[in-house]
Image (cartoon, rainbow, N blue to C red):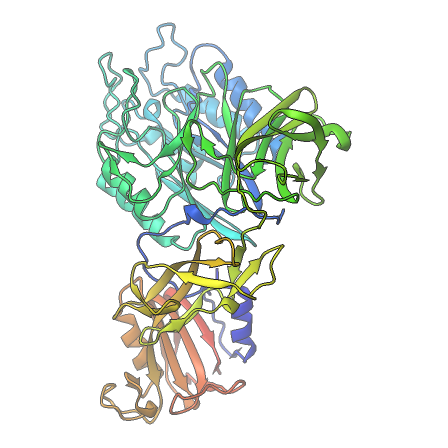
Amino acid sequence: MANLAELGRCLAGGLRIGLLFVAFWVGFLCGPYKAVAGNPGGACYCSLNNRVFWFIQISDLHIGIRGNQDSLYLEKIVNQARKVIEPEFIIASGDLTDSTNGSLLGVPDGPWQDEWDEYSGILAAAGMTADFYYDIPGNHDAYSDADFAYYLANSIQGRATGQTQISWIREFSFGKYQFLGVNTADHSGDPFSFDWPWGDYAGLDEDELDFIESRLAESRDADLTLVFGHHPVTDTGYDNDTWLFYGAQEFVGLLDDYGASFYGYGHTHRFSETIFAGDDYTGQMSGQGLFYLNVASLGESDNWHYAVAAIDCNGISLVSQSIDDWPVVLITTPLDQYRGDALNPYAYTVPASAFNPLRALAFDTVPFTEPATALTYRIDNTGEWLAMQPVAGQPHLWEATWDASGLDPGDHLLSVRAHGTTTRSDTITVRVAASTNFPPVITGQQPDPIQLSEEDSLTVDLADLVVIDPDSQYPDDFTLTLYPGEHYQLSGSTTIVPEAGFSGLLLVPLTINDGQDDSHRFLFKVAVTSVFYVESGGSADPYDGVGCGGEIPCYNTIQAGLESAALRPADSSTIVRVATGTYSESLDFSVPGQLLLEGGWASDFSVRPMGTFCTVNPGEGLLTLMKGQIVIDGLAIE
């Protein structure tokens, strides 16, 4: 979506469309920028308590297996757990059915329609919809079904999309988040085998990888990207496991190139979490890796049946939970220094301050009736438990201010305990700094994105950033650091020079420093566009320097400028600037990329007085709007 404040400012100059009904999609200008679809390093220790959401991941449901755990536990997830936890969505990462139809020997000899009927019936009875429940196939859904016909005909997402891979976006006032479900199951249609790898030649083919890359590229402006599949990407070290036998290197390369933060999978029926940064099989990742979550089996495991993951100020936290174990409690701020036994490279240190924020989510089957004792916390498993308070307007979220001023620098345990139907707790490791200073937090930029002509440069200023810092006065004594990236060069320390011929979205990593500490790394957005000029005094040759005050290319009709814009690549961005005047012509907006059509410029394009228009009178002609994305600013079409 466009930045609404900026779009409103643009259109306030006056847009009149009369006589014709014109419908079009309005979006901001963005173009290709490989290597970003998220910012894993964007987590920050933030006092804001309104930047949190959460979801549930389940896997290996095995509907149809002998016994009743499969159906009973799925019913509990989509009914009781959904109502109590109120997640943003549920993701089911494969082996939706068992393909055994409850046989005594447990041999997957399906597919069986009875299993799929039971699966879809449970979901329908619970009111699951395609914008809330996301299911992808696993190997048990693929045996003897090369075309995934049963998945496509019976799953929520298969019926809704007609595809075996899915992507979805969640946008909030505080950020944009991309989620992607990939199909790692085998396409051979082989039946189950008693010999390893059990007929499970898992992998991602060229078409699947193309889908993944296209979705990652489309949302390169996302704050975080989280990906789900059924299989691990590499050998787990367990003899009976299978993993991606083809496409693993390309897949991990895409996750690395586009800055994915998370890969959640199932298949092994074990719970584990770590940081995966590549290995000899997949190739090493150039970044610091991603959160690598293995969810146990809902339908078969003895415990850890599902995971609740939360995003708070762009930091990811999670807890694995067993069915019927209540309450669920999850610390969301600060971040745990570890993911399993691995050091979390995206966790921050916390200051040795007496005013550190602490937030946790708590869910129970009955309301917490005693706020003074419902959620409490303590440090290093010693001392009294101190009360947390519910956050107004944020169901399930609790907060407190905790004192680290007397702690030695280094690692400490921070525990939150929930008293409800039973007593349960969550404990994390925090790293306390020697300093009492709170690092600054960049919460946004204005405007977002900044627009820049491809022939120009941009000097970034502290005033372009929205910053909170509780113990420093911004921007006094703050400094700004920009870092190298793709499709631009740095001139000096704060000036961006786009690569020649590039148009699209630049994502420029930067930090600020308050005199003591750096902020988290923020991706500053710059929309670089090609600029075409239109002025009725121009000539037939747009490059002869006649008209438009010498600016080139200069066209003498708006349609000529649009036709040139239509020749640009599909992922390009273009501004067509039109001098004040009346243009009697038909217009065809069939531009494949993104287009901003600006009217009201002076004939030499030196200024653009507010409140001026250029008028388009199509007469008996037509306006055609199709394909790309368009913003019209300062034109009257009458």
